[in-house]
Image 1: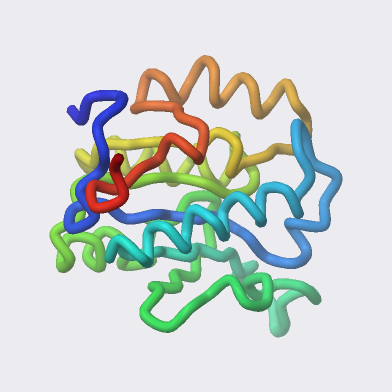
Image 2 (image 1 turned 180 degrees about the vertical axis):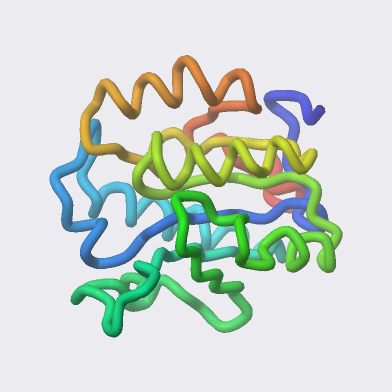
Length: 178
């Protein structure tokens, strides 16, 4: 397990951002707005890319419908060349998506999480990741939920049992340390 203040190895770490899509970022969220989550997530993604860590963008599509609702794409400008985009059709990002295989091909053993909603898409993806043996880090201020209580329950009660909860500013990659 990585020490809480230790920089993350970018060769073994991926940033996973869940459901940063227009229609989800626009929801009434707490304890911060979708735009605040997006800004923090974009800053975190820029640091990950600079360090050479993969950025994985997970978005949801509703199964068995002819067309997805408006705003179902990733927020414009979020995806950059080289990012991995994964489409899920369940709450979590692993089931039936090939995400585990994509990460394994790259030697990733640690995942940093952000996204919306903290207690739904992020938590479901994180629980599956824990079951698969990944070390987990949660960027608390790169997430929001439909209520502050739901966000707090995930970040204060559940996530510490699965990994480390840090402010995004304390998610540091090895080549960015000190």
